[in-house]
Length: 509
Ligand code: ADP
Ligand code: MG
Image 1 (cartoon, rainbow, N blue to C red):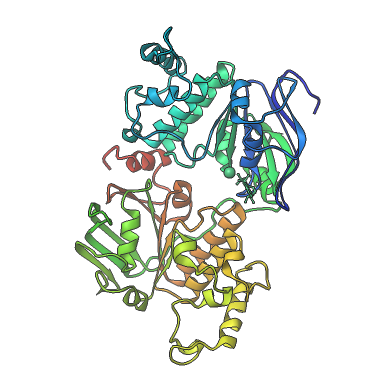
Image 2 (image 1 turned 60 degrees about the vertical axis):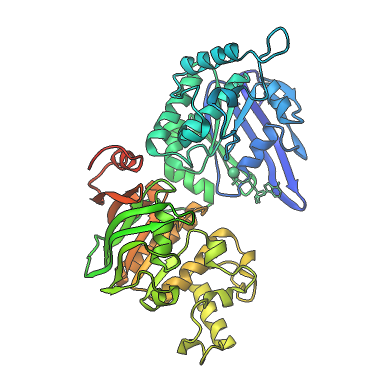
């Protein structure tokens, strides 16, 4: 692409290495002024790295950057800000006990004649921007008291206050509810209408279709092309992103639920600080069905799962598996009732990273006849078993049986956990955020595995912060809010908006 003043940003032939690892390999990005330009790629593709180069946080090894047709060199974020480039990071950088206005002006204070901070003037300026773009934020509220969605708007305001013409948003929707995503998309369009340019990083295809004009795809640090969003499909984007055809729709037959396997009644559980997090939760999961729980992080999901797994004490209420009460027993007892869990934190709870893949494939299965007598394991049997799983689940690299699990990629680590948990043929499989951090290809695999288990007759409890995942995979969709189930729907009978509203604590069912 020729260098031209029509483009807010042009990055040509950007290469960036970390040690011997090439995170970016000759990547091009041409962002036309006053457009929303998406950057799509799997986890680890190099999206944040590319934007950190633009924002002056990283120095590229090779390549040029042009803003409005002028060649620039960004040595630091201060340089970038001076050139009108702002960035909202994945993790916010706000001061909790400061107000919205204080955070916005922090580090960029307007001073009066005597060099003293002119707070009223700063406040007026902030209010002007808030009004101009129709932001829904209270300038006097403290950060700790406002929602994540509002905090994000504060970050955007902060960049605008510093005079950003081009705004980089790194995975901005990961932390938002559907309503907040809607609002963000509206804000993006309002900004573009007023002359700004937006670069948005995401790996969610439908968000690109809804919000962006143009999309650049990168795969493993390489440029894969740029497409006009109006001329492409989610399928085309997905296959460009992962390099093969991916099935985006979850295919499954209707559930044939059998008897109740898990029954939770009026459950109350406190967190480590003694604050009640599960507040009278009721739930049943039958054999042969997937019950999905949608909810915003921190609404009691973690404490509920810990109670299910026998890791924390239950204050009151019951948890029974096939009629046997398992609350306040032991994790071992829970396992003995054929409950398997795919934990949210696979590196901490799911795998022993320094152990080999073979060892990890039989964790918790000491004492079973299959793997030798008593407490000792028969190493050869374990290796055979693990190799079987590696083949069946296509865990890569194929010769990883004696390698430490910590050396595998996130997707392959997750496959090891799923292979192990599923191979024990559980009656109840609890899958917590089973696809977190995985790319589309691996997500497809995990969802198929859950459905296969369902069809074998297991009861599946899926707990996820990804609303799409719950909507697509679960036969029954439940919403958790404030430690209670606040809604329950058969798949296909409820809109995403309705679920989103319930997740945020709004609306009676
Ligand atoms: P994405 O944002 O597309 O998920 P990143 O740009 O964060 O990916 O990372 C691309 C690759 O570069 C990853 O393999 C990551 O581990 C590596 N990487 C990113 N930043 C650093 C760093 N500071 N040091 C070493 N490796 C890094
Ligand atoms: Mg990133």
